Image 1: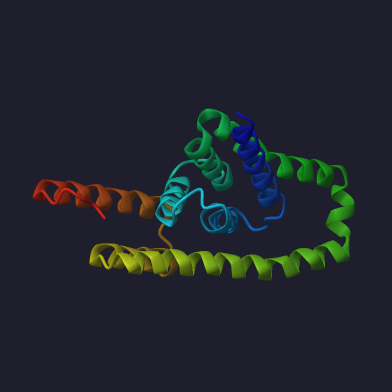
Image 2: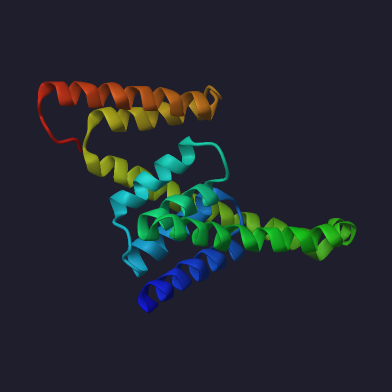
Length: 191
């Protein structure tokens, strides 16, 4: 029992620190979660983290909270989910509460404005890292359908400005059709 409490504390502490030190939104924290839970703690496999990423992007709500629910539940059930959620939401709540008290001073302070501007470069680099890793994993599958879907989805968003929600739903539909065809052919295993 003590060992489980220790792991729950590690889960809470790591989610808290990731959430407190992550600027730039969900993709940034997912990359850091991958490093923490796949590479460092070895609680998840890389494929599981990719599944978590896909699921969290496909459901409503903040991506870090969605990822926390899944990772926490995967590790320790409902108690793990609650622990992970608490670790994820506390830092932004505390930071936003403090900022709201001093909003006028933050808004007009040239040093804070400059710091936020500089942080954008770091955020862009981390998001670029996530994109490269996710694209690399799609390419590793060597499935033509997935690779074509990836490039088509990119073109649809970048060139034609099609809504991400429509693209996600279209990819979900194509994936379900592919699964049905694969199972109907009797291959038995799905990559």
